[in-house]
Image 1: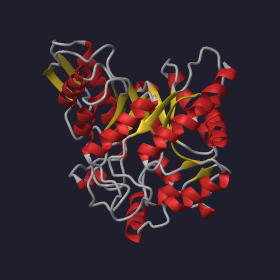
Image 2 (image 1 turned 180 degrees about the vertical axis):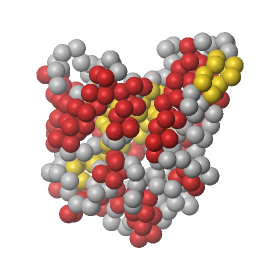
Image 3 (image 1 turned 60 degrees about the vertical axis):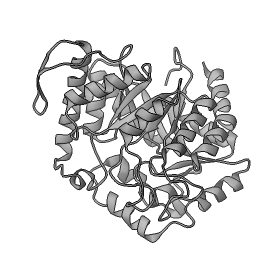
Image 4 (image 1 turned 90 degrees about the horizontal axis):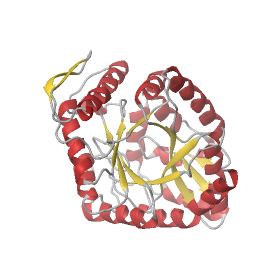
Amino acid sequence: MATRNRPQPRFDWFIPIDGDGERIGTLEAERPPTFDYLKQVVQTAEHAGYYSQLIPTRFANGLFNEDQPLAETWTTATALAAVTSRIRFLIAVRPGFISPGLFAQMAAALSNISGGRIDINVVPGGIQGDFERLGVTSSHDQRYTLADEFISACRALWEAPGKPVQFDGEVVRLDGAMVSPGPSGGGPRWYLGGASPNALALAGKQADCLLMWIQPVEDIASLVSRASEAFAANGRQPEFGLRTHIIVRDTEEAAWQAAEDLIETAADEVKEQRSAQVRGTAMVGAAIQARPREQHRVTERLWNGISTVRVNCGTAIVGTPEQVSEELVRYWDLGVDEFILSGYPHVEEATRVARDVVPLVQENVSDRL
């Protein structure tokens, strides 16, 4: 991947709406996802210099027992935007649970309230049984059609603030809907994730950035190549983001011990819940994350033990600051310009990663520019 005219990479952190702690996969979280705790996470990340924070969307707890407290995404993001001043919010939404016309109003309002600090991560797929849990039934293909029209309808409303909009799609129809005022500045950027043909086709058409869950470098290289073709087919330039956990310590031995300790006390009930959620899933990325590995070792630096207790991204880069930074630079070399990071517990690890890893990545990248 050519480095010419590429910016310094952006580093984001994660908002743990399921809860947090030094141990994960237990029946209860050591640190429940109260507003006071999530505020601490976000303000720590802002102080540490992160660009943005991803807040996921869930319908049940996806890290501890599924009946445990869960912070609702949009309400929480709105409240957190009010207690920060610089950091952005990448807010995950699932089309199909709110009308596009109303969502466009909500997003425009939050964009203005926050001073333009929000972006949208559209999630067309879902954890096995999630849609049905809330009474929505649709196929994998139908969800991508809806997501496509959802984005187009929002764009149409934001491009004509205060004017009635007609939109006649296969799924989405607007009859004189209006948004006023429009979002701040140029409006939210659209992020899309996925590895299936449907996901890449949608990203090539609509996404400002394709998000990828971490896989071995050669697999991400293949995904970047396929995604680039989808963008090129639509006459667009691709942009890529990578989502990964980080387990970093001063020595390699300590880092691998920290990885093992993280899931040491995980409950069998939680493991079975997570296993059931990926069993037979149509989500290509989720199935890859949860693929069984000996001692959870995916590669020399990648460990997917987190996938045994967590939905979605379940792989971490493990090692010393130098080893972790070198691994991240390998993905930057493939074209990744944004890294969405996390570590347990999030307050302490946000500080550690910003202090020990990010400067090394920036230094290594600067040598290539």
